[in-house]
Image (cartoon, rainbow, N blue to C red; front, side, top):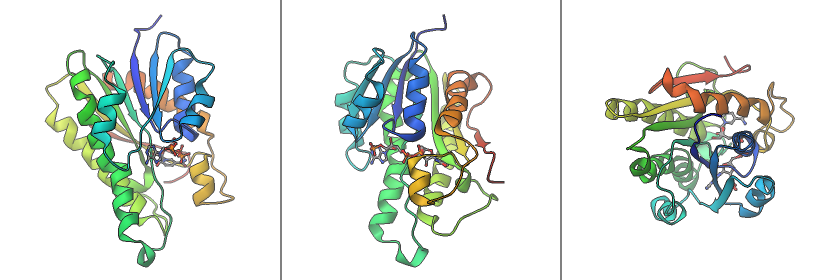
Length: 231
Ligand SMILES: NC(=O)c1ccc[n+]([C@@H]2O[C@H](COP(=O)([O-])OP(=O)(O)OC[C@H]3O[C@@H](n4cnc5c(N)ncnc54)[C@H](OP(=O)(O)O)[C@@H]3O)[C@@H](O)[C@H]2O)c1
């Protein structure tokens, strides 16, 4: 049996996040806290797993306050996966101030706030924080029209990973960022109807789970491309 781990997954109600929690939960020694806005979907997805608890978290506002309540009884967190994401697909001139602020709030600011909230629970034993970004947020990769709010916010998430790792380089807390290529999920279907991704949500989640549980032994402050599609 592996070491028992307490794991928080943000953005767990569908797509890759749901697959991540289901795969983590199949290792019975893990205790998982699965968070998102859609509590019905969370309850349905994880009803078969006694080692998963679910909670309602809206990353659009008041993240610290919500997490204080949600994680009140949790003393130690070993792994945090910041998987939630908001994809706004709109041509640049039509982007509203709200599109921009919400994209940055959900994709970057809420991640920073979530990390602030869990740090006291990770400081003693150390742990791994994994941020889920996108290939579009990596400098020099293929870009897509309509994604300037989304991909610039994902680029900021990559940058945050490097900055956090520098600030915490003498601590036992490691942070890495996975820049994903396409995986077949609701987000992809809504943004690019008809696009066929080379990986399912389950297949992408399998890599993320394995990396999240082990990758901090070799990586810190790294932005790793995980892509069969985008060069
Ligand atoms: N699929 C791809 O091809 C692809 C490619 C590159 C990167 N990614 C990244 O991979 C991650 C997962 O993507 P996915 O395709 O699985 O997306 P998805 O199907 O849209 O799922 C996104 C998850 O984020 C949660 N979420 C969104 N807004 C939220 C909010 N305001 N508060 C709390 N939770 C929120 C959603 O839950 P609720 O709606 O219930 O809140 C959902 O569980 C995202 O960060 C995405 O940017 C995906």
